Length: 99
Image (tube, rainbow, N blue to C red; front, side, top):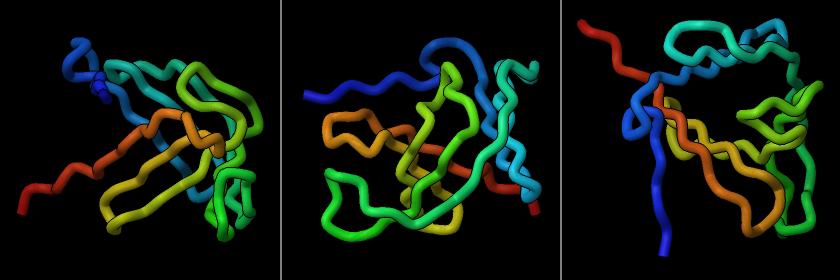
C-alpha cells in the first residue's frame, strides 16, 4: 500500500527552481537550502524499455539523487524519480496564476 507525504502535510513549503541556465535551487519556506546545476539528456536506464528524459544533477542534494527520470504528463506537471523500479515518485505541479 502506498503513502503520501507532502510539504503541506508536514507543515512547510518547498519550491524547486530549474533555471534555463542550468542552475537548480531548492527553497524551503522561501529560504534557499540547496543549489547545484543540472543537465537534461535522453537515456535508457535499466528499469525502462525505451529511452526517457533524464535529469542529471552535478551534486546529490537532500531532495534529489544524482540522476532522476523526468516524466511530463502535462505542461504543468513534472514527476521526478530515481531510475530504479522501486524508487518513490516526486510530483511537482506548477501553481496556476490568477487572471
